Every structure is written in structure tokens, then in C-alpha cells.
Length: 95
Image (tube, rainbow, N blue to C red):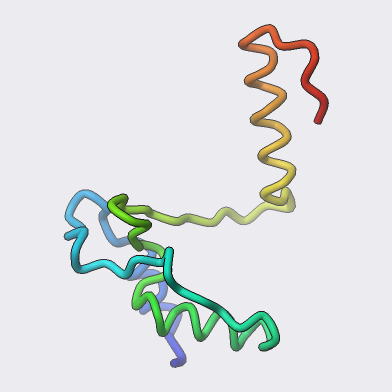
């Protein structure tokens, strides 16, 4: 399944407020073959979800977004944990 840039943008712009939960793919049961190439895995995921930006996890509707930056998810999680430690006064948290 090859999607155009326009099709991907349309999927990414889907409004979570108008999503019908039962019409979304529940990704909690999706399995991706990690032995495939990254591009094949992405294609497989898109085929299985229909819209990789708006999915369901159990009873929850989830909108997924990506930003153009050099920070990884791990970097962002560390920042979040540090910030929460500062707010909560936790000095014994090591990141």
C-alpha cells in the first residue's frame, strides 16, 4: 500500500473528536513481524490500521502525532520525569 503525501496528511489531520471508537482499529492485538525491513513494517502497520494516526487501544481512542526534531522518545521521557521530580520535590529519582 503506497500512500501519497496528500493521503498521509489527510489521515494525520483526522479529528479525534469526530472519531467513532468502534470504527477504529484496536492496535492492542496487532502483531508486526520484526524480521521485516522497517519500510515493510511501516507498510504492514498502515495496512492493518487504515489510519496510523488515529487508532484505538482497548476502549481508548488515541491520536498519534510526530514532530520534526532530533530528540527521541527516551529523551522526552527523561525530560518529563525530571520535570515531574522538580514539581513533586523528588530528589531521589535518577534518570
